[in-house]
Length: 363
Image (tube, rainbow, N blue to C red):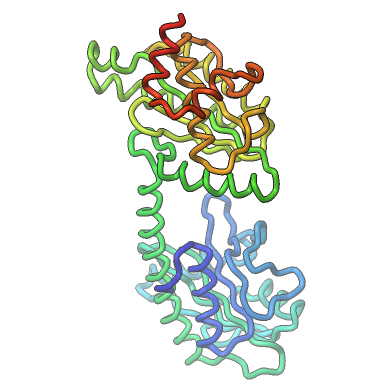
């Protein structure tokens, strides 16, 4: 599991490694979801049956069908024992004798398997899930030595899962804004590059909303940075709520008082409606002075968009214009005719700050 990078890669590597080590032809890794009272299958590898997917979306079983994970294991721990693996066959239980075999026996028969070894996985001192390895009917049945080896393998898998969790947490922090919990600029850059590639390849609509939170400096100067942070957090929540109106949208804080929404798929008008709701809700916040929103969408007449940088320049220019004219609604690039001032600003080589001052001079 050391070479695996994503959770799915880790799950697959764990199951595949155990399958090979135990000379099985099929293996699965499942997690116990306590809040839902079920065992959910994360990965199936090897010779899968017709109804088994490698990474199933909805293969799960109520734990009352496999109560050993909640009852048998805990009874053993209470007596000072260890969560050892056990073997089931198409005829019933054998080495380890969990005592709950009817569902597994039925599954073995239904899928043409002759036996399986089940090894509990313990992570951070709690039952996390289980490792399951099977052999086809007619092959030698797993014995006690196999069950003991499976117990060791489950410990190795648990160590790998713990490492993956740490890596995922580090990755999450690298792409998350610490104050608001939203995505950060790095996450937006990565997702935007992917989205523009989808647009160029398949014509998928990509829209970007760039927001500048008004009045943050005044709040910081008059009420302190702690209150300013509260404003940023509150607006972040509002942005997240409005982003939920657009399936799959990414809500992010770019830094300071700048935020954005990245939507891939929804029509431009849907994005404009969501941004309009964002402006309305931001104006109702107890702190701050509303928000300036600019939008750029590949569905609008803004010229070819071959890079994320160009879409950002357009959305940024629209946001500058919204701030300059004190707009209470979003400004959308490309919707003011052939000589759209936002598109002109984005395409001109002049520094954005100079253009921002020019907009302000037209009030």
